[in-house]
Length: 470
Image 1: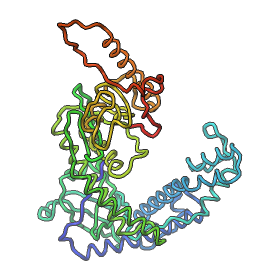
Image 2 (image 1 turned 90 degrees about the horizontal axis):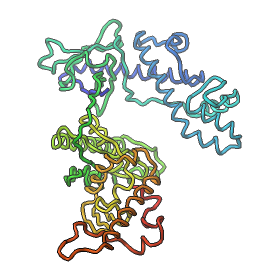
Image 3 (image 1 turned 180 degrees about the vertical axis):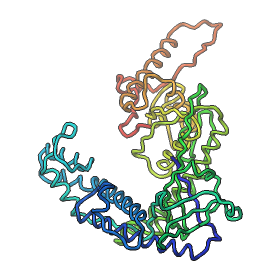
Image 4 (image 1 turned 90 degrees about the vertical axis):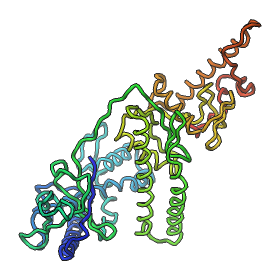
């Protein structure tokens, strides 16, 4: 499922846009009324057959518009109740509860349970339900913003091409309004992603963004599934580049400086607001964060297109996402690039443990092998670009049957240590064998640090720390 966004045409009648604004204001007020009704009635969910008897009626909205507003209010309250679990979870361990009571409270908060009884392996008591929901209803009720988008079903909006809309883009939307029995006929701008009304869902999200009305459709076409091929290439998300391949190609060199400047501005602005005791978010800060995410999405999409074009019919080997400890552009680029590649080509996910510290030649792992973007092995002396080395190691993991994508980094360290020890011992035996004068050794001896490797097996990788998993 993908969202397809288009805007109202610049030549739209201003009277129609004013009526659409009036509809949004009345719609927003009624959604807030429904939310307050649910909170006062201590209900986090209301089923559709109960709408007529539970929610108050609006004299200005039609029955179908009221139904859409009620569904949206139920969604808002349910999402609000779920997000409270992270905040209220601290109270479970701060107060003096038994172990069984804490398990019950955690289960109620995660699953939003309202009935006592056996749930999985935990028996929920009435006391746990009353305690948790008492905390929930003590919190401040959710409040919708002034620019709340309207979620309208197929009974309230119609869309599609029209014969007379050739000069205005090709698509029109007929939206219910406050005038009983009438609809607003609004032209939409032309977009290449909206070609057939059958391919999109019948419900539409209508809201105002940056002073312009947006219509967000949902594309129902399923995402294409790609079959993995025998041709593979490793792709690593680098520190100064968005993508580095195992054959030495670098993509997205210009994104890092632009992202760092904008990321620093956002971080300093947020710190300044916290020092002054202001609200956490502001319209200016929201625009900066949207610009930041938009920059990453655009650049990663461009890089993904270049990769697919440069390596056709190729399976891209990427690392299993683990965002713990990642900051800045790398954290944003991880998810965006992997998602974009997964929608355009076949991908294979592998374990990323120590791929940036392992030497592809001798297998020696040490945190000192890498210094920024430079990789130099402390055992065999190999020099290369650090991100390219990561891509080479990812490609090697694609055929490694001993290391799975979800294996713990400690078990991976044991396997890598054993492999390096076997290579070291075999190289030592080759050096000990007598060599004929007329023959030149075909295998170069592997140099390694005697001080690091003479204290037993556990010191084969002296720089292997708990915080050095990649």
